[in-house]
Amino acid sequence: MNRIELIGVEGLPEILAGDDLGDLISARAALAAGDVLVVAQKVVSKSEGRLVDLDTVTAGEEAVEIAARLIAAPDPRAVQVVLDESVRVVRSERVLITETRHGFICANGGVDHSNVGGRNLLSLLPEDPDASAERLRSRLQQLAGVDVGVIVSDTFGRPWRIGIVNVALGVAGLPATLDLRGTVDDAGESLHATVLAVADDIAAAAGIVMGKTARIPAVIVRGLHLEGASTGRDLIRPVAEDLFR
Amino acid sequence: MNRIELIGVEGLPEILAGDDLGDLISARAALAAGDVLVVAQKVVSKSEGRLVDLDTVTAGEEAVEIAARLIAAPDPRAVQVVLDESVRVVRSERVLITETRHGFICANGGVDHSNVGGRNLLSLLPEDPDASAERLRSRLQQLAGVDVGVIVSDTFGRPWRIGIVNVALGVAGLPATLDLRGTVDDAGESLHATVLAVADDIAAAAGIVMGKTARIPAVIVRGLHLEGASTGRDLIRPVAEDLFR
Image: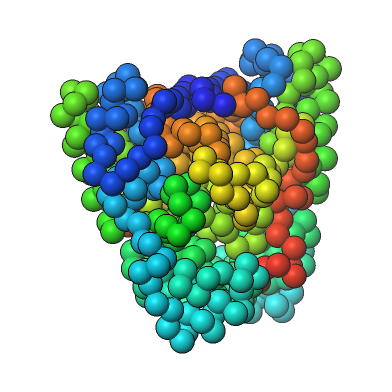
């Protein structure tokens, strides 16, 4: 893994519900066996029709109360959409941080209104990002004839640190983590507590290329030589081990 | 930024206090203008002599108490070293998470005992990672005649998510964040709350190549085309804006 390439997939059109992402991507990218394709959640959600029109939403009491506390003064209906996607409100002072039904803890439950082509449309996270990743992986295998890994990524904020970074929500065909516990370091000492979130490192790498305004929602990561496979679910820390929920 | 290369710097020797990292790296890497060099904190700390011999440390009462609560049952003297590096204990159930003098919130105050060539030696974070990055940047400019950016990185755990990722502690010669607030997305809508932690994304990308056991503590990131410069300090969220401290 001492030389890795990040290649943005250019020229993708605006993605609409029902679009065949695998087809659109494989037509624009020369995928090779062992590549990992990182795809932004937003285009996956759009292709899956995971959009909500605010005009179809009625804000409940909790949504109205929370909206009044937030800095951005959002439409209470948008807060209602966030609550509908969430199982728990983690913070609702200044910003709204919730735990989604998948177990992700993030701002606004992953609900977003940018880049969805209309002011009243909100995008939701995919129902099951691991399944989305696996479907795209199968489709790419079918179309391009090569075995690739797929990560469905999104940008998350972090406690303590400024700014958002790209992380892996859904993972298929590659390991989400590299467990080095029990291995020894260069001095022969046990690396006793080290699990690398390699899918998050890969998503972050792709995030450099994706930027935020450029229309590059898919990035090929080449040269990884990873073995095994797990899921994005493996990156979610169980509640019992979590000190900050 | 649609094609980026990550190139591991191979063949670096075990780093010792007083070693000229810039010289060792530039002798093994063909740096080009605009490259960003990501260097693991561990080798920077070693070259700066930021090591503590446990045999010179006496554990105080707080360190003894905390050590008894932690899963890893550490040597209380190691906990003392962590406390000496820290301004605040954030969590001390199961694991020890502190705020360092720099403002980083991380496990064990960045104190680590792996890869330092001896069981009784602990490595500390650099005194001032931004200054370390700037010194290395100047030295590389002097030796290689090219202007590069430098990131001093370390692997941090995260609340809510499993595993560690590489983040930027010190930054010189590149922007730590890209502030997209006020810019518009592809649909013409304001991206009102988006600051990308680009130096963290770059550090994470380098983390894929660094792995943990391979002796590749330095990675060249080529093709970024970033403008401007700031510091790693800019990635630390001010206490007043922090909901999880």
